[in-house]
Image (cartoon, rainbow, N blue to C red; front, side, top):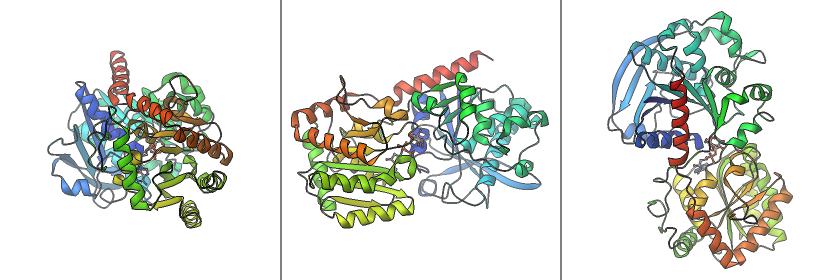
Length: 474
Ligand code: ADP
Ligand code: GLC
């Protein structure tokens, strides 16, 4: 079964968040299960691309509106990632360093999608499934089924996975001329609230759409930046599949980025050594429980709550708990966190920036990982922390709700709270302190967490079932 995954991100080529981790791992597991899955990304002028060899496998030019653009399809030579990796390069438009936030981002993603369709169309390919991820690739199902140009590919089933339903990639109808010619009677499928909305179009046109957890699928009907009614109407066509993790990259027993390796058989000495290294680096007392946060400093993640919640906890618990935060994002939150670290230098350290290696060291060395997310479609951080025996403290929402059981319940291993509020976070931190002070309980939770299996083996199978059901309907 030949599958193309289309995405803006893929670890380790270009990563901003969890989308990259998923697209960098799922196809590998699908291939191990006997599929033939490949990934297609925009070309990025980044380390991975500079350090690997690519062959140009296709060259052509196409039209975006009245503008002709040249494009190349490059293929990584050795399939080093466990799948075929293709990059679409459009000189002057898709050949830059950053993944998002260019003023002509709209044109970048439209050109990317046109080039992909033209390539498979002109090279006479017939993939079994085209699997699109997030709004950047959301126009593909519409174009496949409603543009005469691609009528040869009209029967190809498409799957659309929503990793983040808050972003839609919407743009004005006055840019409709950038799209390849399509059936005017189908124009309504592109529309939501008077604009062209790629996320809405993908939900309407894909053969099936999925979200990255079942709880998030339901939440979208209540909170999706204006698409609630659409999600309510289309819910019956959707499926929530919890993400897996790449257990080769995220494995405390083999992780070359952490100072001491450890496994479920013998957890404590290794974890303690990692904690010691982390505390020495940041000047924190290793005897105290270490609560960490890793992630984008944005409202969705509840990062704006961290400064007050942490200050409150430090005061209330009389400095018995330490905090280490790694993240980058909203400037205001970054500033407030820096001030927090200055106010409580013994208890709180903040690293503003993106650092993959440090993130592994924190998953390994921290005792707890805090995720006060307002919205969390799946969340990978809590899955990594479980794998590294670090107790997740999460708000009960989306994928966090689907993957973390509170230790107060039978077989539980994490800490959950309901509201994204200073009060709920502080209360959870005090529960964490109590767990930390009860060595036997902490040990039991670590054992339970590390015995869990959140590898892709499970979830990859659910996608394969979905593909098979779509192919059988042809
Ligand atoms: P999202 O995709 O919404 O940001 P996820 O939990 O799915 O959230 O994935 C976040 C991924 O990005 C994880 O791999 C996490 O370790 C990583 N990450 C986020 N911020 C940073 C950072 N500042 N430095 C290193 N890794 C980070
Ligand atoms: C998004 C979501 C996150 C999810 C990730 C991968 O970025 O915010 O919750 O884990 O995609 O699916």
